[in-house]
Length: 403
Image (cartoon, rainbow, N blue to C red; front, side, top):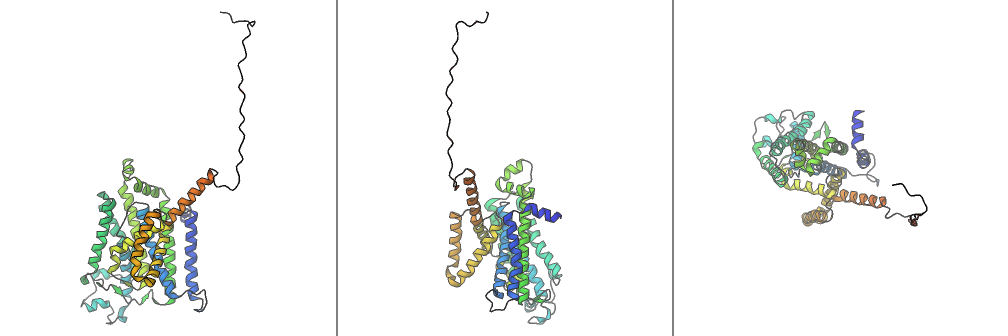
């Protein structure tokens, strides 16, 4: 009851409708894939299920950035790092599940460690043979990194473009570190050749459908949590810090603590997105740390509309669908099209798709409130002017007051 009441108070009708749609998609798409024969026009191919499952993971990543950028004013150019760390946590679990079925048949060491002449499993790989441990690490590692980074940055009052540059430097440093073979994460090749997850073949249609449903449900959970937080008192403080940080500090609040909470929560959500992403694409490597990936997340959020919750989800799906289409139809022009899209949105849709829609609807409501645009003709009320009344004349015969 308490959870239901919190969710009911924190969700508006649009967000609630979006959640219902996601739950319906989580049920309908795997069912259309598994229950209908391939020759049925309503059948959803397995590769489409995997592709849109990847899009849903991107949508959760964009939503996590919206919490930090759209509501706290933290333009992070390093959210790809949290996404990749969550992916590596899940990838380590999937590598441990290969066991003796690898190329070298070593039941303990992954193939890349055998190839590099590692003699024993590093200590930081212990525990990743258990799914629950990998799931906790997918939340804990990105959250802990964001907490430590944010505590140092926000306490030092680093804001604006300087904070964005530092977040970009952070993800680039992780990119260089994970490229090294002696780090124990597969170097340039990363982690791949996954066999199973929770005992199920990771390539089977049933597993693909289950991963798609999990992605949709976790995206719905992320939207519900974001909407609940942002509509609470804490959410109002986050917006206050975004719009007037100095004024918020002068009235007695600690903006660094508010920003630290939003930044850490967004990093945890990004880690969940990465953990769901890896088993669906079948690989995780250091290229996920590339600063260009984090910049793309900013573009998805800007296209959909930052600070709107559902806008980044729509922007992530639309941009990545366009990317898939352009890379097939015009592979050499995709980057130019992405740049042109960002410039066009900045110039003509500064609030994003959902933001401009909200602005248009609010304008319509204001016009209706003042009676403009109504279909019924207005009837003018005649103005009746009162005739002036002259003061009565004084009668000389009337008795005068005694002096």
